[in-house]
Length: 382
Image (cartoon, rainbow, N blue to C red; front, side, top):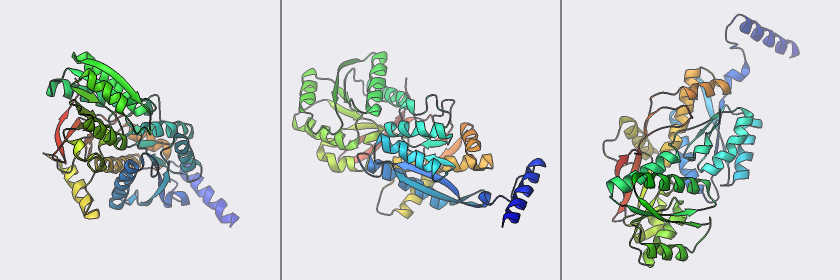
């Protein structure tokens, strides 16, 4: 056995010296492991599960690359920052993955990103929109737009399309995603010429928003921007309706969830939020969006596709595309290929990774009418 191993090593060395690929390496014939770290339990579990559904759907469609099987290694980050770091550490050190997908939640992505940088392992974020996720990072990429873009687009839509000039902000002060988006909305709205009359705060897990909503009713803004997650957002909407609030409520992509209507009931009427540019009923759907929608319904006939599933789907295909272009499952080769991604056709439009490792795309606008989620239009920041 030792003789055969030594001979194998010698042949591989000769191959390298001659400039040929060491095709005799047993590792090159085994599965390519792709890690996935998403919140499958805890506060963000619903979003994480939707993105995992999208990843698995893409894996079913493309189970092999470079004539090698692709193996998904899924780890639950439990909606917790410490667990996110541990999850990425496990994927790199124990499972020896070539690349990683995740995560839903910017705070979770940032915690995992620090570990990925040290491990020099490429990660493709799904819906982690905070700029800090990729800022200064060599190995972190994402298939979503960033919060300055999203917050500015929300402000642009409110000011230019709805002609509303007086706004307020209600945000979770303990959440990086909410704090960042609120700041970007406020800055853009003021730059456009609007007035922000209040910036009120709450903490994750709060159930009673009466004090904040009473103050907002007194100030009479045209719109209140609340970059909440869907569970808390639904509670805010219901309490605002019970208190007789007349202002419009607008959220961001974390409100894009099938349970928003179930939890909010009649209170969601007229509610708006930003989203990524995909919807199963959107007008002028691209060929890639149609394909994703058809494949989704074939696999999930009783469940509508959500944009988070599309983002998970995109993240998987982005990595597969990088591996094909690199001709290798080597971590650095994949990283280099990801950085060079240009014009990749996806259900959310053509995907190009820019210099900061982010994806740029229009921002979709959703409004709830008669209990139905309606995709209105797309907007780019001004």
